[in-house]
Image 1 (tube, rainbow, N blue to C red):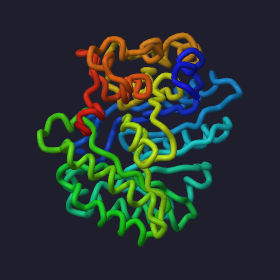
Image 2: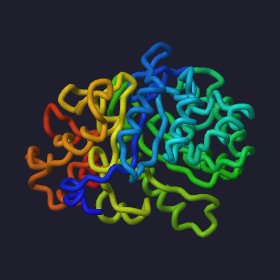
Image 3: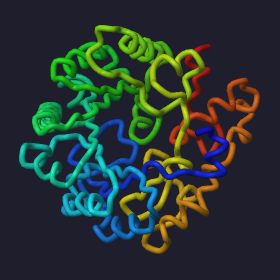
Image 4: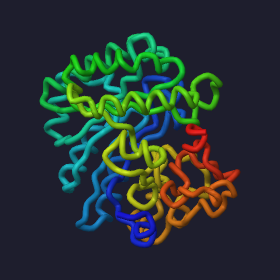
Length: 338
């Protein structure tokens, strides 16, 4: 669907629940600064939200933090299934074993995304937890043995960009069928370190690598860049199956662990971007009648965007990397092609 059409007639396709912001890791690039202590949604919170949605049911993603740390994770998952919503989760996979996969199958999980951010030392360094890589690989194998086909997402930064090929070979040898290598984003904890963000040359190398695998007849799995960022006309058709469209607030909504209703969990948690709270508001009413901050052309506020010939293709790039203070994108494909 075209962006302008969706701004007028949004279509809720994906609904993310941050059921807890607790996490057993302390990742150096975390966009939401999760910790070992935090907040959690209740089963009734999730149930009430889903019951407000009519027959056209979006796909539900349970996430965190680490969603499996929620004390009632399986009850929530089963509730989502019983209400007729397809569901999946994003996880660091460190808590997944044979027993967990059996319960996940019973709860009807259809998709799962697991993060593998480099080889063992790089992954553990980023996660700030020794053994995180081995436990994640164990979790991946358990999912495969149970018949799931997990997608692996890998965040590349200056400390692991030279491991692209090693990660590719590892995942191919494991029989992974879908891999999404992406760049570290200038959000959350990644902004606290000056040596994480990819240089223009490294970002270009990442896209070139993805392109080479997608057009290699011997490539053993699907390789695609993530949904983030407009990449310019040439790279758009080379590194993924669809042209860029940020779905925040027009295709995607989220509920934070404190009940706040927002567009995308990666977007900066600013008061003016919170659309309501499931504790006091009807979720579907909020979706239909608010979200105006995400259903307008924000490029009109940016002097640089106004002059750009690809402004209406880009739309201001990803909302989660839009600087709402300066009214400009934090990342711009023009910077990587100059």
